[in-house]
Image (cartoon, rainbow, N blue to C red; front, side, top):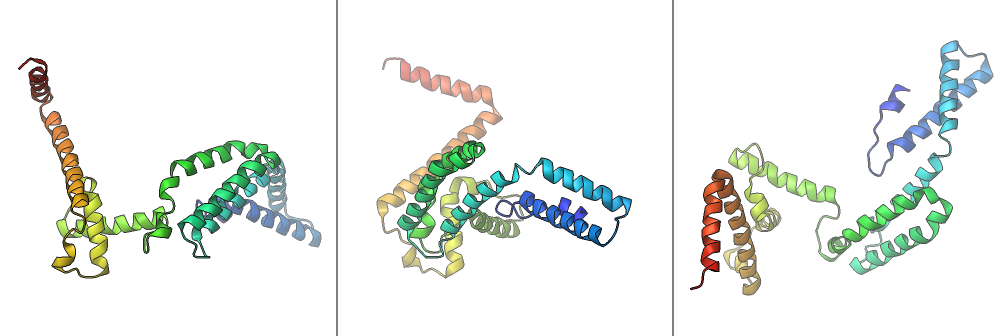
Length: 244
């Protein structure tokens, strides 16, 4: 019983609540089989009564949870992409699943309507970036894989620099540093391979990185001396307002 109650499972796909429900049913069935062989001791009888009461009072809740997790596991199967479909194929299957959830599930389980609305809203908000991993080889397919990639980079950076935390430059120049770090783990690169092929895109990237750096510089200046920073802004504003 203690093991069944304290097992957190492996969320989000291995629902600990469903696992607990199955284990409590197994314990109750074991107690009932024991009663057939003879009278149970009082502690076992009390345990059986508590389990039976709890499972009876919550019986109507579990079918809804199991129905929701069937949809979740179906979505996981689509995203796992065992058929090795391209991005368009995975997108088509996932759109069909969302359509089926919207059409049929609220009729069978009205209590799941709010969950389905939330699921559809979150999916639509992240829809543009869900399928890059099926178009770009070797791109991690899940947030966990991406977090492991970023975590490994932070780990090696801390070992190389002696920092306890990640460098602030990772926020400013992550679009370059992370790509460079991931690429150099695959193989060594020659000098001629590092030359930009698209000069305009390279210039736009440098401009964006410089813009982020300037924003951080302004924030630092304001924190150090807010009055002086605001005075400089006011002077610049007056120069723009006054006629030349």
